[in-house]
Amino acid sequence: MTRASGSVADATGNWVDTLAPSWVRPYLRLARLDRPIGSWLLLLPCWWSAALAAVAAHAAGPRLTHLVLFFIGAFAMRGAGCTWNDIVDRDLDASVERTRSRPIPSGQVSVGQAGLFLVLQALIGFAVLISFNGFTIALGIASLVIVAVYPFMKRITYWPQIVLGLAFSWGALMGWAARFGSLDGPALLLYAGSIAWVIGYDTIYAHQDREDDALIGIKSTALLFGERTKPMLAAFYAVAVILLGAAGFTAGAGVVFALGLVAFAAHLAWQIVRLDIGDPDNCLAVFKSDRDAGLILFAALLLDAALRRLA
Image (tube, rainbow, N blue to C red; front, top):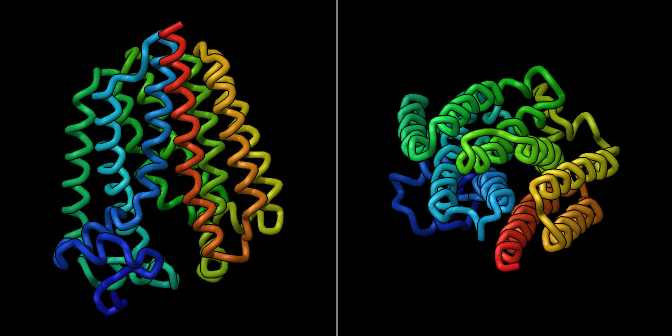
C-alpha cells in the first residue's frame, strides 16, 4: 500500500489498508480503527472499574452486558474523540511528518464530512450510554467537557497529558457507577491511579513527535521532561501502582489482586528500562505494551472476584 493510495504514515499494512473498501478507509482512519491501541487504553479503566465493583459487591465477576457495552462505547467514543481532535488539529497535523497523511490534512475527507462522521460515532456512544442507570448517564455526559477541551491544551500548557488522563481514565468511574449508581472511595482512587498511568504512557507516546512539536510550538510532557523522562515516568508509575493498589484493597480485594498488581508494576518497570526516547519506533512499541499491562490488572481483579466468591 503506497502513500498515494491514502495510507497514514504511522499506521501502514493494517486491515484497513488491505481489506476495507476504499471509500470507507478515510473514516476508519479518522476513528483510528487502523490502530486500536487507543481504544483499548480507553476501555481498560472501564473494565477495571467493573471488575473492582464486582469485588466490592462480593460478586463472581462484572456483569457481561456491562463489559460488552463498555467495549462498544470505548471504540465509538475514542473514534469520536480522535475525529474531533483531527478537526481541531488539522493545520497542526499538516506540519508534522507523522500526521500530515491523516485523512483531513491530506484531503481524503473534508471538515464537513468529518463532522458528520463525528456525530454518527457520538450517537452510537449515546445509545450505549442510555443503557445504564441515570447516574451513569449523567456521569458519561459530564466527560464530554474534558474531551472537548483536550485538543486545545497542547497549545497552552506543557501538561496536556493531565487533561488526557482525566478523559481516558473516566471509565474508572463508569464501571463502579454502572453497578452501584454512585461513586465511592475505591472508584475515586482507581480514577486517580489511572490518571497517573495515562500521564506516563502518553509521555512515552509524545516522544515520537517532540522535535516537530518543538518547531511548531506544541507543548507536551515529553518536551518538559526531556532527558529526565525515565525518572519522571518512574514517579508517575509508582503513584499509579500505589493508588490502584489502594483502590483494590479498599474495595476488599485480596492476595490474587496483590499478585496481579506486582505483575502490573513489573511490566511498567520493564517499560522504563526498555524505553529509548530517541527512537520513535521504540517509543511506539513501549506505548502499545500498556494494553498488556492493563489486561494484567484486569485479569487479577477478575480472578480475585471469582476466587473470593468461591471461598
